[in-house]
Image (cartoon, rainbow over all chains, first blue to last red; front, side, top):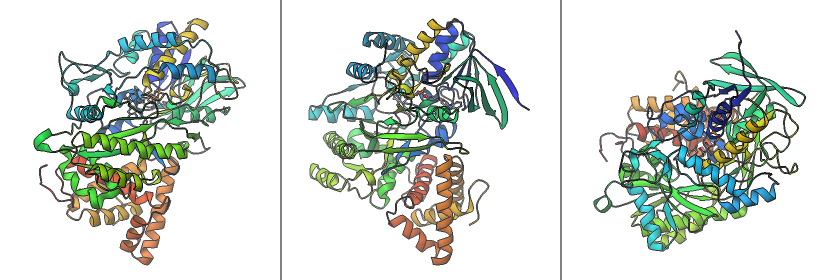
Length: 480
Length: 116
Ligand SMILES: Cc1cc2nc3c(=O)[nH]c(=O)nc-3n(C[C@H](O)[C@H](O)[C@H](O)COP(=O)(O)OP(=O)(O)OC[C@H]3O[C@@H](n4cnc5c(N)ncnc54)[C@H](O)[C@@H]3O)c2cc1C
């Protein structure tokens, strides 16, 4: 039996873009219905960065890949709150020069840097963005120590966390969307349907009129006045393509590719360095925006995973996992990818092509990251690419660099954007300057897909600031 | 080995061989649990990836019946043939991640009981 719902504004997806849009529009008096493919999972009910979390809160259990040479593993949140529920919570405002470049290169109207930064300030307040009041984890201190010894610029990245007074890094409570903007939207009357997957938006010419969904195997339809697609940078273009919208959609996927290594430290001197439930809050920005270094989740299972490329040589380190932590080198990529919905297939095909400069940069990044680790007194470093040597001295880094090829590396990313870029330059952009899809009257995008390029820093603040800006503009133009 | 409730039999057979070979001291119970986990993850892979994994799995399995499963496993794990090499990599990654997340005191050959 088909269930039917109606609303003024249908919001697809409840992540950084969807939740903020819902709060602004519901508070402006619109009748808002959010549909979310994933379940509602209370913060704290699953262990962060665990396989259990991947089962419950990630798309495809976290095993998703953009095909290419090398293929790039990526992950997407799939639950109420989207990626904000599972991510590391590291907050970066969009850099001013990035905002300026986007404004001029993509002809984005009403996009004054000061206005975006003022919204960032609001976001910081709403999410309680702050540094760790108490002690840092050993993994954080390692990155700081190594970079300091080299004289390389580094610092603590504030997070959207609340802490008991003076508490250490691991005691933070993540201020994700299920704790902040979603409750705010419910207070203003918004509704949410979790475990509801939007399959198709039905259009009549320039207007979208209804949506077809599936809930527990049963069909659901929703009639609406306007629809705002916030499914994230992979699902949003696929949803639009299934609705027959293709102009500049899904053709310019941008990511921050990363390569990783595990580093082992002397337990007698440094104690346990592995904090499974947290990541380093320090980043090394000496070579930004081209490359940045930071810490990754280091559950014992993830340590094993990071060693599998060279199991014969590296495998024995796995029993020492409390003394190991995983770090990444991320680059800003010149390459671009594609997202392509295929009729009859549930999931889109995703591809990504790294340029030669990208591949070289990944190698340089890994070498510099290994240098930071050695300076921080790592006994052994295990780079995650096939055929890598164990690095114990500076001389080994040269050997490692000469053996590196991106095609042999486990490249991955958690920052996905730019698959429906916004701007009035129709040749480059899929939507206008405020997210209205070109060629439609009432289909909007308001998520990471809109960012014209990868911002070169952790992207959630950029996604939220742009989503709030666009939602306000919508509310100003269409009375609730 | 036949497939379990959620693991296609071709993938189960390959995973069983790979785990037996690379983690020889992993107990039968644990190996079965790991294979189940791998199967669950394969079932939720994105459409194209799942299709690819199942096709490669079948190819490896059928060829294994002719040349021997151990020979075929050595062949696909050693040679860097694009796509084909991703199959053992996926199975190993999922399997090893599950083993050490679930039983963190596992030794490098899959044995139990060495507290880290
Ligand atoms: C592991 C990880 C770590 C990260 N760390 C950081 C960090 O430290 N700092 C930072 O700034 N950023 C980080 N990010 C990135 C950040 O989380 C994203 O940039 C942000 O969440 C993107 O917001 P979004 O609204 O575009 O998409 P999402 O937050 O991904 O939300 C999209 C939502 O739409 C839903 N959806 C998709 N398709 C459908 C459909 N057909 N029907 C119904 N619902 C659908 C999804 O289930 C999902 O919940 C991280 C991401 C990940 C995965």
